Picture 1: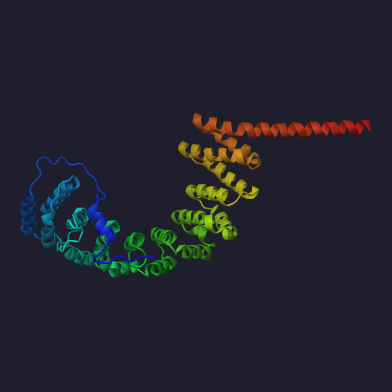
Picture 2: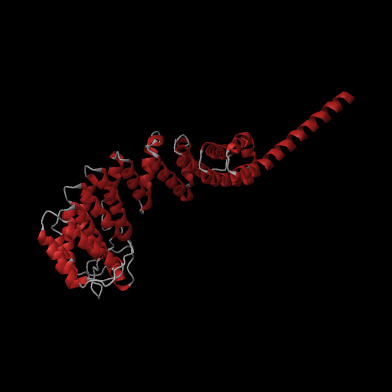
Length: 393
């Protein structure tokens, strides 16, 4: 039975306070003799008071502060200064630097409890989640994806979910990933309606990146895989037009579902065969891989081999050719009969100037040609023997 973390006992906050914190940003900076907290505090206050319109001085101070913090300096007493003087600023560059500061600053006391000042930070984040500018909203959502503190995120869930229906795709895209990050960390108990709202977004979304993120969330969160499969089956006739980033995620879902639901293999194969017509080389490659995993029939293996050979012949990148040729070699070892009809097509790849590619093609084709030649000779010998016997009789 899952237990929802409470404000008084958040396991994530205790873990963050008791162990080393993860680093999501690292930039080298020759800091020399670092300034004191009092010096930085005075510079920030002076920069905010000097010119209300020009934020260049404030930006310079904040950049220096962040570089110092990234390289190990600690300035815990600057938190209140940032809240008082920097949070009210509306300059977008300042906003972005402030987001990085929220990510880097110490948020808990020595005993693991959340600092009292973070209540004011939560209020500032809520205001940014409802900001009229989509860039500020998106940057805030990207920040929340990295925060793992229950008492910071829990008051923001309502404002966060509202961003799923924002008019701008940049906001919706990051809102979906933020919802996924929170649900995967704290469970669906923290956002009970999240999966339903993401599913509703998936059905009406027109932006491919947002649709892909929504589908990915349903696929990876517990108990929502069935919703993702229902969407795939409902879009079976249109799946070829969804765009490559969506098609690749669909293929990943099909491989996952095939492991524990073999009874739907027939329906999954129909979707995979539809995706064979995709113009994207990445989708063609993953489709061939999926066919090999789903079915061992001669038809499926032949279709996968044909897709591999087509990629070898049409792709210009030699690294891609070598990767695909390794797949073809595996098929040759396991399913030689499925590869024999494609020998002539594969030999067209010898027009490639790369020696490694040509050698690999010859290594694959030589056993197939020898086997085919032996078969032809055997058949010719048998026919000759039968003709001789007929003459004798």
